[in-house]
Length: 607
Image 1 (tube, rainbow, N blue to C red):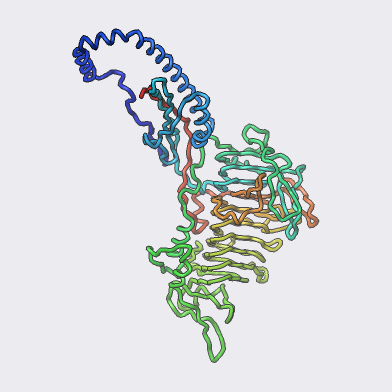
Image 2: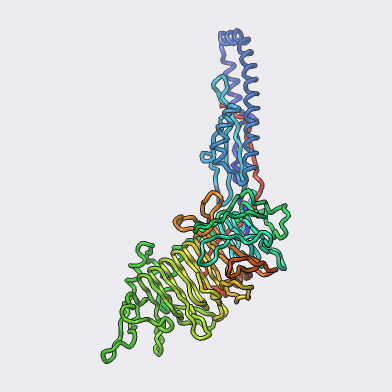
């Protein structure tokens, strides 16, 4: 719903132009009571007072002129730095204005009740000059951008979104909307062959910029910069250090350029905050209370969970797994209890667990949610019990307090399966053979995807999707890796969200996906970075996708192909997300439609 903010300017009478009857009456009475002596003294001093008054008038006129110049420069500065950079004005312009004009500028916003309201802002500044008679003449200048409009929107209208930098080096995006604080495009992409350290860049001679326009051009929403680089975009070396953007001055503004496919540039509106007040930790803790326990069990709604106590608290709601023996030999695990979780920690010392069947017990309808403390490696399928029909609803979960390694294996011509909901307090590693996947991963650390060659994700089960919410970076380096002409890998549905950054390398791989990729780019984990730095060597926070129209052969040589993209993204209509994906974050975001800055000034005031 559109929400318009009322004008924030306060109406106040700054001087009394019409005068006051009471004041006039007092003045008349005072004059009538003057004594003859007083009148005589006034007459004697009249000539000198007239001279002083003329000097004062000249001084007032000069002061008013200087104040008017200063206010004019203030207005120009705020409009030029749209959205107005008041901090920079305070730090640099206020001292300069005083040095140039002798005008004393002070921010009176707080004292007069101005400031931010939502995404709108207003300010009040005082421009003053001291006169020779020790009085001060000043004028107030009020500024506001409250002509703007805030419009609520569904982030799932967007297929790519980040509060950081979005770097798209090739690829095809048949989607509705794309958002980045800064969006940088290139027709060439840096890459490293798997198992090597030497860095390369795809040939500039066969460069192909991101494709945004299929049937309808994608809307491109860039909060600040929307630029592209034609050549010499990246610094490469023979080390394992991240790629480096060679020179940002090589990047040209897309708007008004000769770039063939610009998309539909949205320039009169901005995303005020793409992710709103969404809290990853609160969402995780709500999941642990309401959805993670077995079957329809829940934990108390007022249960206090923190990252420091969550392992101990969840463990207190669990019972340890027990080995069941028959005639002196181990036969199977004993799961005869009704606790919210079963603690499987230490099972490796006794016997392996079949994660295909352990989440439910045949015959009695009992379902289980599992927790494990420490690093866990699973080299097989994970299949949780489905309830609610064919929609793929899972009422059990696996919670691992430590890193989780998932290694896909083959079963004849069939892939491993991951069906269900998994929480990882640590890092997640997905490797090996292909996985058919359906359900949700919530990971507090980083997520790494490095499949074997020609292996990757599918989402064939119930035709549903893969939801991955990660508290740190998501890095996809090998997915359907191939060094021959593209063989059109199966399309899969994925929704990726990272509190930090997302890095996808498909120069050597292939991805065809439906869904969305979101990265908050919070920058709270500087110890972890994705494989891309800016020209100063500072890690990029946001989303980086390196793609190529062609393939890299086994000798590392790039071979271009026409209209064959290593990365292809198809959008899903916003209303379809809830049907396809489980556990989508409840973003509440707004679009700020910018209005022009408006300025108002008071009369000159003498104090």
